[in-house]
Amino acid sequence: MDLIIGAGISGLGYAAATHNPYLIVERDKEIGGYCKTIYNGDYVWDYSGHFFHFLRPALRDYVMERIDPSEVLQVQKHTQIYYNGRHIDFPFQMNIHQLEQEEFIDCLYDLFTAPDSAEVTSFKQMLYAKFGRSIAEKFLIPYNSKLYATDLDRLDVDAMGRFFPFADKEQIVRNFRNRDTHSYNASFLYPKRGCIRIIESVASHVDDSCLSLEEKLLEVDLTQHTAVTDRRTIHYDRLISTIPFPTLLSLCHVDYDKSVYSCNKVLVFNLGFDSKGPERVNNWIYYPDRSLVFYRVGFYDNILGQDKMSLYVEIGFSHDAEIPDTQMLLQRTLDDLRQVGVLTTQQLVAHQELVMDPAYVHITQQSEVDKAAKMALLAQHDVYSIGRYGAWKYCSLEDNLNDAFQLAERLK
Ligand SMILES: Cc1cc2nc3c(=O)[nH]c(=O)nc-3n(C[C@H](O)[C@H](O)[C@H](O)COP(=O)(O)OP(=O)(O)OC[C@H]3O[C@@H](n4cnc5c(N)ncnc54)[C@H](O)[C@@H]3O)c2cc1C
Image (cartoon, rainbow, N blue to C red; front, top):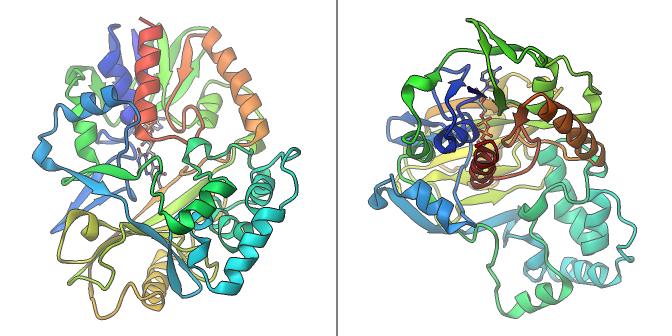
């Protein structure tokens, strides 16, 4: 029997695809993991913005075939950066021509005179080498430091993989005249009833009687092939885990260096107002300015075509940081929203807060090497760790589904 830990997209995806007998154990009282949706009056809120872009048509069709097409919006992405009191298009590096002339010249000069990139060993060094000092220091470093809540010198060169909007000098210059909106999520899908509809679609392939909610994994005995939960001891043939990788190592009593696996956490405020705000076109806006509490604000109302402002606001913390009083942070958020012009006369009528911990894992050279060694060790005991946090990587829901399907095929 395959014991699957976690009923997020990864655990459900594995269960949907496997031909082996299985049991899913999920500590929460609902399925979905980070892909849950909260309904609050007129407002539809996810665990921060979750929008769907599929590289693989077969996976898109698999997910969408069980959702009524009239329920799904296809949105052409429109996002900007709030920089020095004005909005410029995202990504910053492609749109430096929209800056004040002096700043534009600095960015362009540094872009063309950046030292050779042959020796870069960290994400931060890569930003300097690829884009030059001005682009790095005006946007890429402050924004990503706010999001990751760590020194970017710790992160691997490839810490964001395909999600980083690379552009070479030629593409940047060409974009001055002919706007290139190409990106991994230039257009995205979003179900009108929120992200949970994607989960429900995948879960419709899963046998409900093989799902145990509100049951938490506490310990694994690798040699005995047994898992202890807060309810029972379960004997398994293979264990498929989607919980954060360092937690799994601890539960399996595998020694590891805790400093190798770090991450950020994100406090999300979902905010509902009594009327539409002044921002009518952007799906979300990036805020690199360190004096503003949030790094990104998304507009559900612009995506869903609603007539009342509905926002998600993301604030990054390091994993170890204590989150200060959230009432105070909410007040600060509202003040900062006023300062950047998102909020004018609208009244807050509904709100909700949640913490995503972990949110973005810190991919470092050390974590990649250690993870590969520990995964090989676990596999010798028929334990497999998948998912965004199980595989300790930066990825999308589609990648999770793809990895889950591939593992199910391999363990057939
Ligand atoms: C801020 C943010 C924005 C994002 N935006 C997007 C987006 O726009 N598009 C996109 O495609 N992806 C997005 N993602 C990524 C997406 O959320 C993840 O890839 C996906 O949700 C990961 O699913 P998972 O099943 O691997 O993990 P999870 O969703 O974390 O599921 C793991 C499950 O394991 C359970 N669990 C944990 N410990 C135990 C235990 N001891 N016993 C039993 N159960 C346990 C948890 O309760 C949870 O249900 C975003 C992520 C973040 C942080």
